[in-house]
Image 1 (cartoon, rainbow, N blue to C red):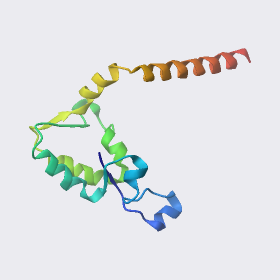
Image 2 (image 1 turned 90 degrees about the vertical axis):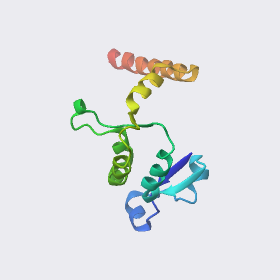
Image 3 (image 1 turned 45 degrees about the vertical axis):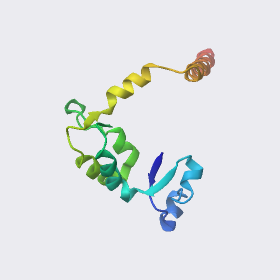
Image 4 (image 1 turned 135 degrees about the vertical axis):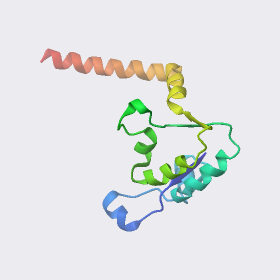
Length: 132
């Protein structure tokens, strides 16, 4: 896995808190490599050249002004990701939402246990509130 992150900025980190640097990101985040986010567009273009399809979170006509998952993840870096997405051949672009819906239908045993535990905790909390 390749992760794209911003360069560290000591002045900005004073206000926003520490960032994971490109050098330490692979070991801290379990990635194979880390690259500067400014290289995302060119990297995506090179990968897409040989890919038959590119699944991406693209807004649909009926989504109105809702932000896409990609824009939520990239925040102020949306311009960089928008440039990369805009450069993709339309014939290769496929909506990611359909594939995500398929994946969300299937839950592993661990996910099911966690959901049951969360429901139990929530139910207990609601029961305590209702007693008072």
